[in-house]
Image (cartoon, rainbow, N blue to C red; front, side, top):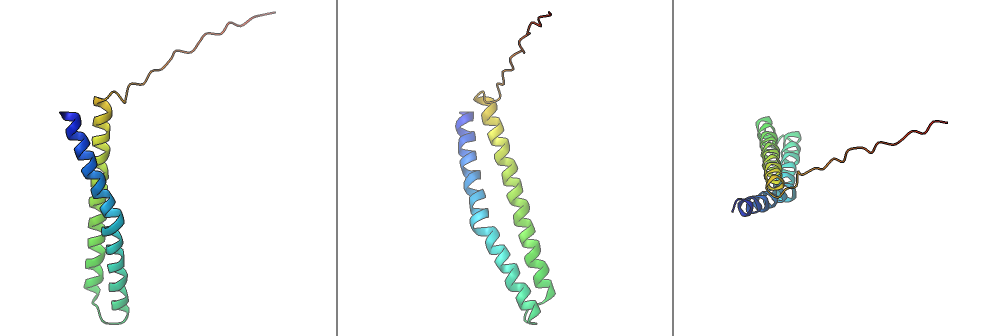
Length: 99
């Protein structure tokens, strides 16, 4: 049950991250560029530039939070499914022949 929940969470987080990367962040960057052009042409106020930049930073921060949540879900899945079972073989002792 926990594995299924984590798989659903991972799928949702992946979709949200894709939406941020494909749509939300590019739109925020385009908005900043438009507002900066407006500011240069005296059709927008500096406050608008600050607001657009703050919005983009908030989106970037949320994207990083989603990425962290995705990494946690992946780590929990790996733990439950035995993905962290590392096996280290002891080194073989080689005999040194002396002449």
